[in-house]
View 1: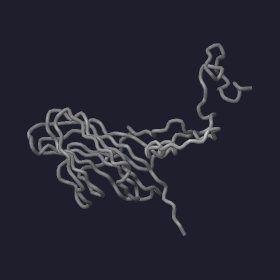
View 2: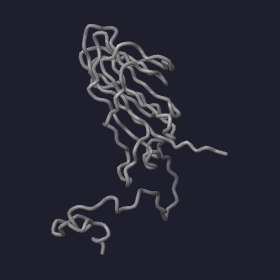
View 3: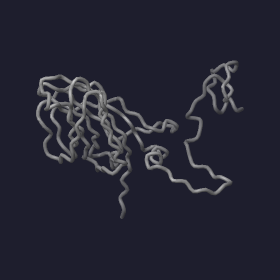
Length: 213
């Protein structure tokens, strides 16, 4: 009966795991939850862990970004107008920049140059959920673009050296409603004749918007 409830019917029992057969269907198990304990205790849960437990935390990156020789590259978290969630940016990184010192401009709600492409390199942080949560926010990018972002706000600027990683942990304090975006814009104005490349990664959570009457 245990095998019937938790295993596919066509599995062989002679290759056992804890469920009695070679493989098991994770969707037959209940979603993670907080269970009652016979002990009373107090614990502080980091906000990122809490949002991952709720199935709201996502990570992703844009790879093989190229810029230099008068061009730039960018990646952003874009919250579509009809998403129904607020975007909380928790962490962003710029890594594996080759050949050239670089500048990373951080823009809020800007219109970037070039044609946005959607990155498929995105995953929820909590893979124990069934079904797996799907993000509403889109991770977009573009390489070898000309011009600067328009509109929005250039919030701050970071500079880095080749083969170094820029990391900022924002702890969810940058919040964007539907239609908003968080953009990392890369260029190398100090060495404009050198080509460069790298990747931009993000961690974020999505909070459903509840309308109060």
